Amino acid sequence: MTHPKSKPENGEPTAPAHFIHKIIEEDRAAGKNDGRVHTRFPPEPNGYLHIGHAKSICLNFGLAKEFGGQCNLRFDDTNPIKEEDEFVHAIKEDVQWLGFDWADREFYASDYFGQLYEWAVDLIKKGKAYVEDLSADEIREYRGTLSEPGKNSPHRDRSVEENLDLFERMKKGGFPDGAKVLRAKIDIAAPNLNMRDPVLYRILHAEHHRTGNDWCIYPMYDWAHGQSDSIENITHSICTLEFEDHRPLYDWFLDTLGVAHPRQYEFARLNLTYTILSKRKLLQLVTEKTVNGWDDPRMPTVSGLRRRGFTPESIREFCDRIGVAKANSTVDLALLEFCLREELNKTAHRVMAVLKPLKVVLTNYPEEQVEYLEAENNPEDPEAGSRMLIFSRELYIEQEDFMEDPPKKFFRLAPGKEVRLKHAYIIKCEEVIKNDKGEVTELHCTYDPKSKSGGATAGRKVKGTLHWVSAPHAVTAEVRLYDHLFTEIEPDAIEIPGSLNPNSLEVLTDCKLEPDLKDAKPGERFQFLRMGYFIVDPKDSQPGTPLFNRTTPLRDTWAKLQKKG
RNA sequence: UCGGGUAUUGUCUAAUGGUAGGACGUCAGAUUCUGGUUCUGAAGGUCGGGGUUCGACUCCCUGUACCCGAGCCA
Image 1 (cartoon, rainbow, N blue to C red):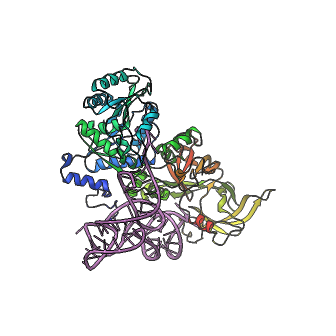
Image 2 (cartoon, rainbow, N blue to C red; image 1 turned 120 degrees about the vertical axis):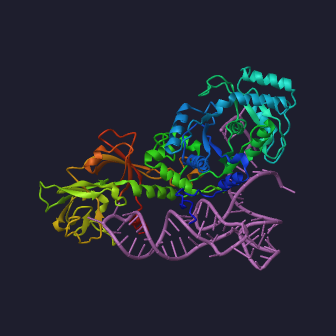
Image 3 (tube, helix red, strand yellow; image 1 turned 135 degrees about the horizontal axis):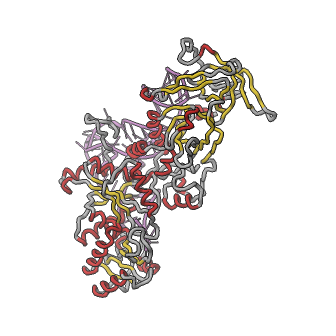
């Protein structure tokens, strides 16, 4: 029992023992932070959350929960130009939907603007910060390069008094955007560029989504993040690998300020095959209308996955299974799909839906007769009960379930062949009807009355079983089929439109479903027998006319066989 | 000779210096009124080269490859 999900006696799942988990255990054993564990999830409200964020959310909230601690939701809103309320609402909804609760601990970096300003003044007084007049371009030139040291700014040695005065005038709006910045005085020759007198504040005469026009100087990420952690008494500040180089700065600020000092740990962000997770490119898909918004079911956003029909449980399970490490990696999308199907198989009710209908007439079935046949709702769950299916002389089956010249292992319907109709009878194809163009439009079959499912003489076996619906009773609905947005296995490596999949969306408007599906509610999930898992689209469905999104097809070994030829 | 990181089956991830294990995927078979599910089995791995050791994924030396870093973004 080495799998992370193995359950010991107490019934609680054992968390995976990844390196951060171990660090926390060691910290607790050493009595650090009085054994307290307090994490935070710190999104910038400048876009929608995606599956990569879900990994971070599960990590931060999961660790807190496991160790009896807390996890804050903190919006890192230090750049008013990019941030919007729309995004904070969406982010809160997504975190909640994923199943996590920050209770009353909803914080904003902007809550701390006042404190951050005071600390900046402290830094100036300590001779550790100065106001810079150089332009952005000049600062870059003075900073040096990756392999050469920088040189000190001519303004580096201004007096404390002058710096204090200038900084206050920056705050009061005395200068236009870009005219000045406040910089930390650390080491312009440091091999770590982040330590070469980093910018603490820039002037931005912009309206902030929460503080309005109260401020015209805004703290940079580095100046805000660690101190926010400190203010919130965070113990373990977990972020992604690209911030490793920032850690010395994180530590420097907290040390020179002499305030509570959380520790930063970095893990590798998630990459997924066939999936783009860069915020910039996701935004591009939305603004260029390649997809229909952030919650397009093809998007890897949490809202997209939700609308596609993913469950929070399956996403959490996925995050548990992928582990947490420092090595860059790309997880196979198939694992996400596995987690999804694993859950849906146990929970989704089975129904029959014919996506691409082909009419079948049972020539030996009485014209006016109908029958009600019992069908289990979920063979994996006896508690799910059963429903009655209506059967009649005219049916629909799936077009791809019939072939005029079938290959060797085709177990479905063909001229002269028999198949079972699920929960009903065995039928035999007697005649193929075609139109002028030679296309098959209808099948004439006979049914075997003795083969009725559940009956005393139903024992006869045939190779194939098909789903079907009664033609006069079926409801017609629109179903949307989705495929990967990209054909390339690592689409993030190239620019859009690079490997856009032209067939990522297929809309079917003439699908025939079991009559009861007319009343399916938005967000309700089903397994369309043999076809996959589907969800009633919460956005485009109308009462009485549900519209379905295919969440994922079933595993299909037949399709695999065919591909191999 | 810029700094910081990382290398374990196809993929993800484990292994106080002591049998390299699990999951996904793949392949084969069994079961099945879903070509689903379930069950059984198989193939497949320690970046390279040295060294220490009875014994090395693990320690030492030395290479190599890849990722991140020169925003007044986060």
